Length: 526
Image (tube, rainbow, N blue to C red):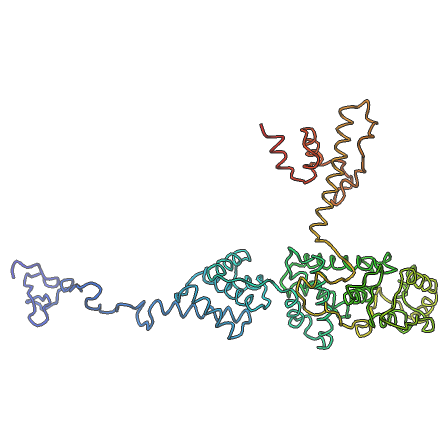
């Protein structure tokens, strides 16, 4: 015992071992020696348990292990996101089952798992052919649409699914019935607006306005248009915010819709007077004309108005009736004509509606007669509006007077059936029209460049341009807006065309517009 180390308390070398506990104890002062009683737990993972920490727990007092906690948090996150998206309990279970199938029951933690939940929610709604904007899902999840789109692609590829195409008609019906802007509208009016909107949406599909474009701005434009058609005050900004699309794009689609209706109006006798600015004055007649055209039989091919059966009767009755509610303000009656106001005695009689034919000359004669009698309407408006000054406003016909909704275009049709219908206009895709305009513009630029080259190379014979058909510079530069007051005659495109012509490049190749490839091939290819 004398050879033992000194006691920490008294300093004597009288440390021994207690027979009962086995601890090191000083026999002189009886103090238990610290740091001499460590008993290591030997035996590995299956050995004795520790004093405070038990194997398989993540903290003191925890009842669940790590996997159970992860699954609980993941399920809770799914429920929160489904609530924010407004999913029903049934749809939430479908999303949860899809997440379990993809992760093999392991769920996940982190940003990628949140994006996965949003992608599964979008895929579930698409499989059920119900509208759900990917922008809305991205806003709820907290990522951009491109990251969410990549995750959607991975989910579809992993599960080997085939998503159905986006149904723009169902999307229009959904937002018309659920958008806050139309919450106070009567259900009967909603039903009429639904038929009118479906008719116009499918017309836009036929005119390729929806081809290669995002569909929701088209839906927003039609919603605003049918609201104005039924005299419901709706702002395009509010509708765009509710659909979570760009306001600028919605305005552009709205303008394209008006432009297509103006082209349809060219088939009417007074069509040359219709423009984008005054189309709302004529829109009831234009849409009624489109409806009659869509109901015409394919076998009857005439120059003007096809045989529309009994439907043509109410068109003539409404258009030539003096009781027709078609009002213009006093400030707008000057130098403008009111169409289709005649006495009932002069109404055309129709013996057989199925055999009725109206020529273009007949309608033009009626239009001229009505235009000459314009002073009657002006005097009436002057008497009725003497007392107050009215703002500029165009009132359209009440929808019960002109809209019947009997055309098949007012119902959901397949694309092949929509294309076969005749609505008074056969338009090409806007991208195709833009390509044709760009092609013609490049041809004119080539002609102008050839003239400049000829003038520079042969200054003495500059006036001899018989072989070169010169065009105005304004037409060559058409289609481009210039902010400067002073218009420049030539720009970078003209210089490139001149360079290619000097390098003996064929005009047909230049007209295609692949300038970079042509420069690499003919100019910079050393």
